[in-house]
Picture 1 (cartoon, rainbow, N blue to C red):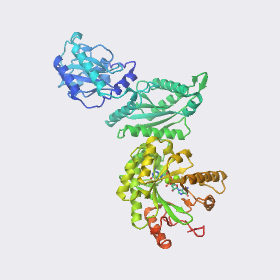
Picture 2 (cartoon, rainbow, N blue to C red):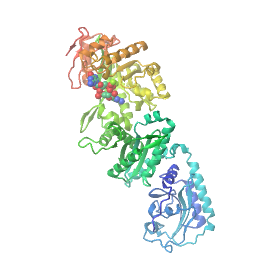
Picture 3 (cartoon, rainbow, N blue to C red):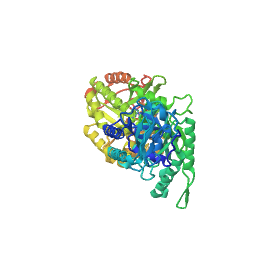
Length: 634
Ligand code: C2E
Ligand code: MG
Ligand code: MG
């Protein structure tokens, strides 16, 4: 049998099919009933509703009689969708269709080869022929067009059902600017491809394309012209990927290409080709504009991951490309990083780390230099990797954030830190708060109040002994929900600190709008504070502003005496840094806290704030500031 040809508008046809969200769904009685009716009316052993996908034909009926999934190249339905007319083959053998073709004889109905086929096309609401309502017999038949009216009516009913069952708005599927599939179409399609990959048939790869510096293009030529450029980019990409892959558009200047069964070498070629298409100059309003794109590529060889995870992997690869200077193609599982653990390996290890109890928390105090009291113990995450040894947040937090694993890890951190703080309190060391770093990903999920509330209830720690450290990015990227969450946390009594202040946007208005208890000035502003005039002015300004708002100020990353005395000059006495104490394992913290309390501050239990000594991570007692002399002692 000759393989069916591919319709001219195949990409849109497939898109129309995927938009129905019918592929991969279970059989349903309503479709079965239509097929049963067709069987009875036309007296055939098999009647089915089929959908013609890129490579396969899917059947949406429970009585499939061995016709579960057929290769499109060998299918009669693949031929059927090429015409709006009914496809009638009364005797396959007489029609010259080879009997040894699996589409004809290999798949049989009730043990016999197919001899006769009659089908009418099923249309998507876009008008594309996406499948067939077909009749199959094992003996020659004499179907004729004039008796097919009931079959056509039944096909029309199927079309109606498809629309009714699929009550998703087209806007969720089509990008209005480029007309490309978008949004749900992308996740649906990735999920479907991954489901096939799981059954070992395909490798699924996702290319994430982002135009470099597009916001500058937008701000220099205007949004309308920017939109025209994005539309042109879409038009250039589409023919470039051909019929084998699909292009999707996501908000802004983001595109995806989904590929199946493509090697890394071919993916690199494709990505370079796409980048070259984007690099061809655009002419806009008499100006010549040259764009470049960064591309991240992620592949799943055997399924086992979700659409969201594959998208996150492609996003991580894209961020890698951006970090490498843009106009670059990067693989998630980068083969260039020879000898280094590959990101994908770390990702799969990270997935298992919680279950394997590989995380632990270290604690680093914030000390009030005047009194030597501990004001807070900050929980800092460590990963005891079974092969790679001790890993610091810089090695894995980004990956945990882009893949969403941070949510579960962050929850563990909260529970562990609250439990530790409560156990210290129960041992009589109750005058400091425990602070926990919170990623924007955790915070923006909307259920963080619940998570925190669980951790507090579970541990018994009073809310005002927990401090949550947020970075400015949470506030800048935040929306009404973020503000609500912050309000709720305040109402619960949890303390809020803004971490790494001075590294991001340093948006003063966000401090006014949100009731923070504490600002932690990032170590980059503290560095060489005595000698660096610029840093001195920055820190002075932050301190003044915080004082006017009644917010505590902590200097992070203090390493030298010089920095410490500059801070004193600025009136900042709350300090965190290696000079005073390195992060220490919890057992060491406990020993040192209690030893220090017993030695120096016997009345600590009734004091609101408690001064203690501290240790570094190598379990050595580090320098501890002496409040009376203003010097440090070992
Ligand atoms: P951070 O919250 O600003 O924590 C302070 C970091 O600075 C810690 O690094 C600490 O070891 C380091 N540090 C403290 N004093 C000094 C100093 O005097 N000099 C220098 N050079 N560094 C100092 P660490 O533990 O590697 O953590 C890095 C970052 O990772 C943290 O920055 C925080 O943003 C993030 N992180 C740590 N634990 C967690 C966690 O449980 N969840 C989340 N989402 N992020 C975490
Ligand atoms: Mg912090
Ligand atoms: Mg910090």
